[in-house]
Length: 254
Ligand SMILES: Nc1nc2c(ncn2[C@@H]2O[C@H](COP(=O)(O)OP(=O)(O)OP(=O)(O)O)[C@@H](O)[C@H]2O)c(=O)[nH]1
Picture 1 (cartoon, rainbow, N blue to C red):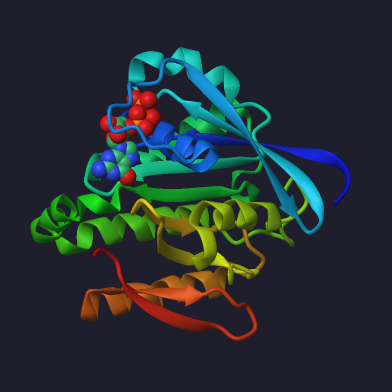
Picture 2: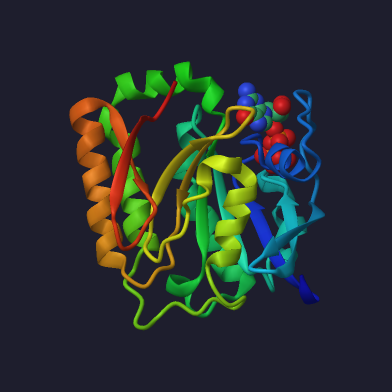
């Protein structure tokens, strides 16, 4: 391993109770507290990773999702390298609110080119699939229309090759690698991908890599996934491989 560590600031945003603190603690300390309290303001933990032989320190900032803590969390958005927009799959509003979270982040982090900024959407609490299925019955397409809107919104075709402030998407991929373990080992692509993965404690991650060199391919991929879901109730997971675009099909819930 070479050189000094590269520090990467990652911000977790999302409604109160979606599980941001739990995600962070699970990732860094491998602990899960079913009686977790609401965060007040912000907290952060560091996690070291090795990426391509280089040491990267992820500084993960967990923020308070409740509205009353807005003024306490927003000053910490500046300087972020990546924003993880988190929702709970059993709470549709937490998903609908992601657009607002994204706007808040762009404003307070003073992001000049939002279309080039790496946002990742995480859907947490996959173990609560029964409630999520109730949403399905309420209106099957609502959630996916939202996903599509969000995806399109995030996936404005960039004007040039992606140049994130920390070099490349490799670091982000490594974050997801570490997060979801061995299942994500094939995450090596240059296009936006929609991934659904279960972690060891059954969190579903819907990960949208939205900064990419070829957005149109991503939109096509997403449409394909959407079609599969509409037709068969299955979600297509492009096994991320840019040159040989191949698909695994997995049920979105258990
Ligand atoms: N069933 C289930 N519960 C979870 C999961 N992740 C978190 N929780 C629970 O959800 C509750 C809220 O989790 P937190 O991690 O505190 O949520 P938060 O988003 O940090 O909330 P704020 O601090 O208010 O912004 C806690 O009781 C957790 O135990 C999960 O994957 N499945």
